Length: 377
View 1: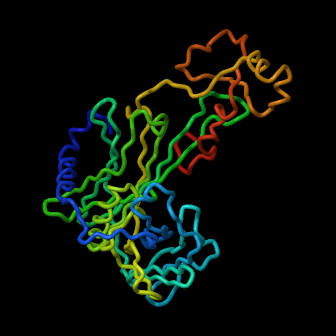
View 2: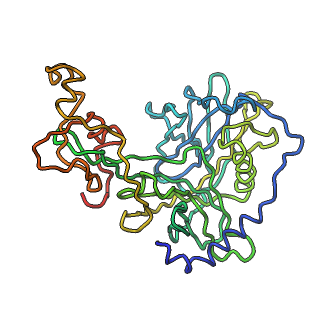
């Protein structure tokens, strides 16, 4: 969606602003900062359930690296005793994520999360699987030149929602060289964010909610950008819980930041009920939708800058001596093509230019393997 199409979305955006205005300032009663308590984040869902475990930090430690929990056993348990997550591959990633293969969950059963960390065991409440409707639409808005590109998700089904997303974008090297790949793909996801919205408020016939925003000069928008939005319908209790957590996150910019002691969810430590746990686990099917932004759509604003130096052979001889090709055989590559806006080095072809290998090898910025379903392959 381009700038000229903004007018068709005005009613939706007004509704979105109205929904934001419904949230009052949050002040925890009897607030007490607690550190080193277990923080659990995720949703039990079909196919793959991803659970993140961390420890909260003290108020004066908000700038330290996250304290991920990597030594846990994490399972999804059905109320008939069936456990999902027995595979040896279910181990903590470096970012505290545990991936559990759940397959197709039966809506006639309830499910809960089961966690074992050393001598302690944690259980969430049982939950029936909530059926999530499809995403109606994803669109973007950029009101004026130089302003961020804001990506929205919209739905008309009256539910409470939580969203997450994954991003993939094409990255090109600064220069082209025959011996290394020029076109790659980079990716990111919102592992530590809380994005929630409600379409059950009075008058909320359709909900349009901002998912993320990108600066118009960001490298993500240079060629082709794809966002995959995952949508989960959540219970009213979960929505209220995440709404309060989100207000805490907005102050500290992390779900694992200092936590008010009253923000307990539906998880308990059964081996020591006095141990506090932060987190709320719902069971919900996941719907997802892909959305592309092409360079030709007008979201990107060109900033013609190059981060890498060019050398003539004589320059490299001065730096490394006449045998520089043998002394540093993998450090430089011969440039075979320049960006179209870089006119300085266009000549009659009698001069050869070299650059650092990482400036012509896109793998320094991403993967040379194209994502499945990527256009123009």
